[in-house]
Amino acid sequence: MSNAAIVLVSHSEKVTEGIQLLLEQVVGEVSIQTAGGNEDGGIGTSLERIQDAIQNVGDGGAVVFYDLGSAKMNAEMAIEMLELENVHLSNAPILEGAYLAAVEASVGKSVEEILGSLEKEFGKSE
Image 1 (cartoon, rainbow, N blue to C red):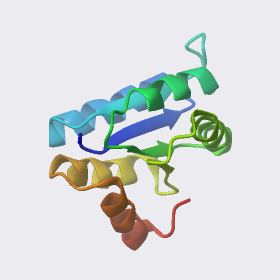
Image 2: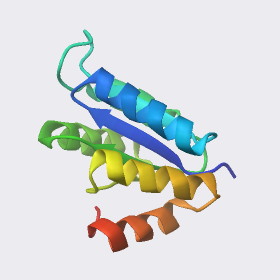
Image 3: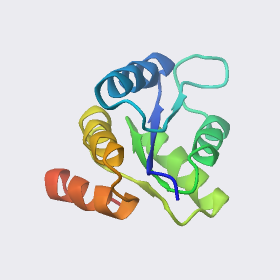
């Protein structure tokens, strides 16, 4: 079984790339998938990009973080359409939540354990 992964969904590709870079420098070997911007690389979100990112998380499942409302809506649709049980959306702030999740994933914690830590720190996720 592989470790839990992180999926970053933002209206900006540069935002997801920056957070990914920070997390990789801090925690090292954690699967971090990104879905930033729309299909043309502009500001917006892309259901297809989100689905692709989620499909690349592996067997350990994933926690998905988002920046704004339509990113949340598209992430919810992607998870529902892919019918994946071990992929969960978090309401934690994208940077702080992903940081906590990446640290925990790096020490082998499961998606369920990570969600518990996020809930304790930031409140209930979906």
